[in-house]
Length: 170
Ligand code: HEC
Image (tube, rainbow, N blue to C red; front, side, top):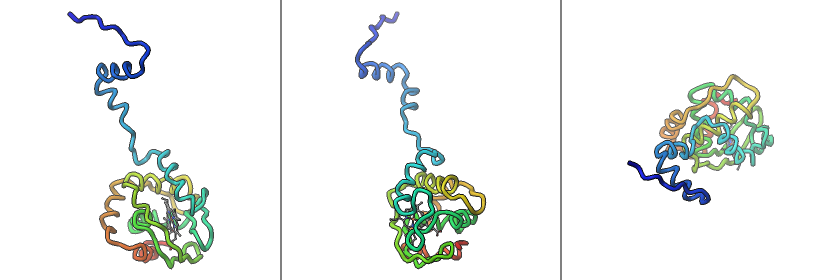
């Protein structure tokens, strides 16, 4: 026979402990943070750091910070281009680059603290919400980002920039 247990009423800690012991796994699963690459909120939140340079609309500052628009979606339409945009974020970029008819000789710092899922999330936010022109955008998976990371692990920002043209950049 089970002894009736008094139900703690007022202390949140006691209630939390009760929930954990009685609901066990269920409670733990619900408490686990969601880390889905396609979570639009994460991409939007991460894009704030990009917007500091590329602006919140992704139009950029001509001659200083390139737009994340038609060239971005053009690049995302090929395998080499998808590797290049992922590497631009993970390894950084140092031009000269010609993007949508303007030249850029600046530096983009590597966003080295982002993991594969975060890189995919921010690129997918750009491709689906920020870039409004260019070919249809197919989202990147974290696995695709991981393979670009491995391929480009030794590349300098200048070497990443040199991939632009062959990757279909305009
Ligand atoms: C400190 C400013 C800065 C920040 C922050 C920044 N970028 Fe850039 N980005 C640049 C510059 C500058 C270039 C062009 C490089 C050059 O001039 O050599 C560039 C180029 C790019 C390109 C290449 C575009 C093309 O058409 O070839 C992509 C893609 C890109 N950035 C994405 C991002 C994303 C995504 C983020 C946020 C995670 C981000 N950038 C954050 C400055 C920045």
